[in-house]
Amino acid sequence: MEVEIKSVKKEDNVLTATLGLIRQSVELAELSADVYEHLQTPMRFIEVAVPVEMDDGKIKVFTGYRSQHNNVFGPYKGGIRYHHNVTTDSIKALSMWMTLKCSLVDVPFGGGKGAVVCDPYSLSQKEKEKLTRGYVRALGSFIGPETDIPAPDVATDAQVMAWIADEYSTIMREPSFGVVTGKPLAVGGCVGRKEATGRGCFFVTREAAKAFNIPFEHARIAIQGFGNVGSNAAILFAEAGSPIVAVSDISGGIYNSEGVDIYSLLQHVEETGFVKGFPGCEEITNDELLAIDCDVLIPAALENQITGTNADQVKAKIVIEGANGPTTPEADQILKSKNVLVVPDILANSGGVTVSYFEWVQNNYGFRWDLETVNRRLEEKMIDAFKMVYGFYCERCNGFDMRTGAYMYSIQRLAEAMHYRGWLRNGTHKN
Image 1 (cartoon, rainbow, N blue to C red):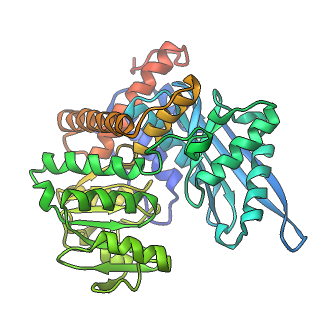
Image 2: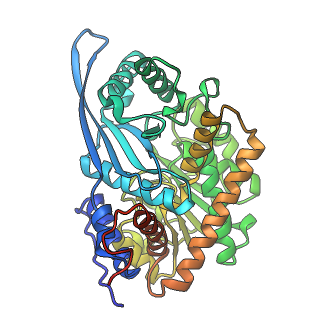
Image 3: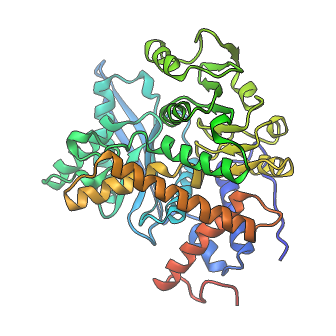
């Protein structure tokens, strides 16, 4: 069956791109059109107003969102981000990716995503807490341990999750810490959760290097984004002996052909807040990092970083998507033509939701696993998922990229579940 692959222009938004990929994957897998009908829009999209008394005594009203995409496998699951550049379409797309991600790694969650439109770095700690608690009160019964389980995302952390858990418990009049994951250990968090997304990226990179016959201990790594995901992955690469030749954050980037001393860089970032100015390295821009001569490129920042305008400059053999949506569909086609393997976000950064699932299970049963158990089970999950998706891609996706394979594999699992739950009128496949 021939399917037209439509390019998504830079000015098109991420939701348009995501819907195009979902539709294409449904058609390639020869699934019923009803599958796309269920997946093309969230089951519920919530917009709330959150009034906050600021430190100067003035009232400021913030806008909050929560997208609940699909719960065929279980409760909605997805992070909450605090960011000034948030749109309804981006939040919907992010919730769709969570649905696909949970299906791909076989955890019993659906896709959700939330956000508050704000500049988190201009808020005091007191204002941030008021905003968080107000957001929870506004969402009310739309979240819960068996309904929708938020987690940290951009500019939110374990402390924010603790405020959410406390406010929700106050509303429910009983301790209910399972309402969120990514909490501090003192209130039901899971060891290894903070590092989980970066650790998952590490495991997937190692498996991809094997598939491309690249000696992992000599693989030259470039990481765009040195937040939670990028920095934790960098530590693991350093421990494995893989040289990290370039790193960047919002301040800019650094390059050292012999490899950056990651432990010294972490100390520099702790002291200054940024990568920029780290001694012994050449300063580069984020755009220059994407074109660095390396074996593995890990975009771990924000969406739409590798596009149709710069994809032809990528020299890496493998791209591991630590961030959500860093590569546009047009860039995917260019990278495919260059024989660059792109390990898609719904696989590459699924370590976070996997360990969130572990945290949720521990909260439900009232016991805790040790770090060795968490990391071992995460490694098993990530290796199994990579092998399944890569094998499916090699077998079924001749002429298409690994993202298409991941989407097809995930959507087929979703279609099967929707069929057994009675959501599809005419079965999973075309008549």
